[in-house]
Image (tube, rainbow, N blue to C red; front, side, top):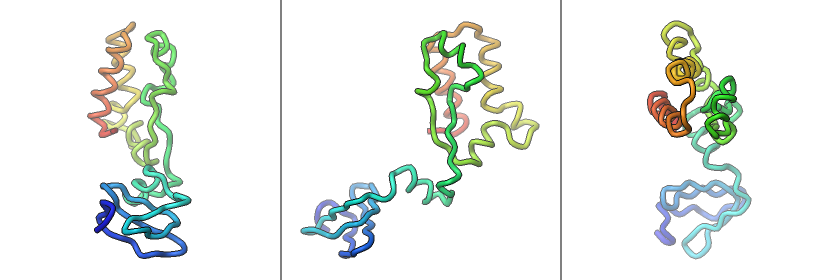
Length: 142
């Protein structure tokens, strides 16, 4: 296979799908000299991964890793909450915030931040980021 491609795609007029170096490309294009020239890329990596996971691309929500309700505490430590956001599936976002109540609610994202600030009223940026790293691992957020 030429050009480092795992598989060559046929020349097509409407779309081309190719795997190159572990990256999937989807777009309009044609094979050129054993490689693939892709123009008018139609899906970015996040949309593609969302679709591959069987989730609708319309069901993505922006999650503030540093919750808005604690904005003043994060700003006091020199952190801008808008610099710490991720796109999550609708279902994962609701689960993180304790959908279903009970244990899920007690250990939800914002409740963990509440407990963190009760124990650390004036944390440094490094203490906040250490907490964030721990919570991302616990909740499976990349």
